[in-house]
Length: 111
Image 1: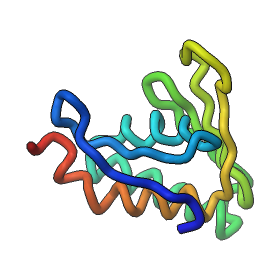
Image 2: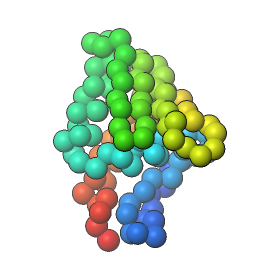
Image 3: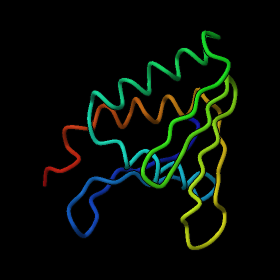
Image 4: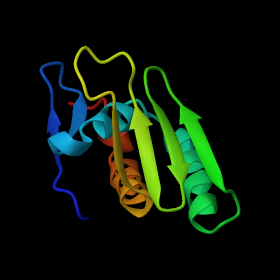
């Protein structure tokens, strides 16, 4: 993993992921994924982009959306109070973050 991250529980005891400021909007996106079925679907779609089956793919969640291309993924949150409203990382790194979150899905709402 190229980016430093940490998992922590917020004041409501919900599991969260903290990422560096330059990619912090990815936290908004990742934390919206709360089921194994949902994340498995996204992981499969991202792998299809990486392997050239799809040219690109877009995932829209509650407040965020991810636009996935083979090399770079952009996540946007137009509802943020302050800029930036989008961040970019390598698609392989995005996939790795989702795999990390996948391993923690069962713990999201446990205290």
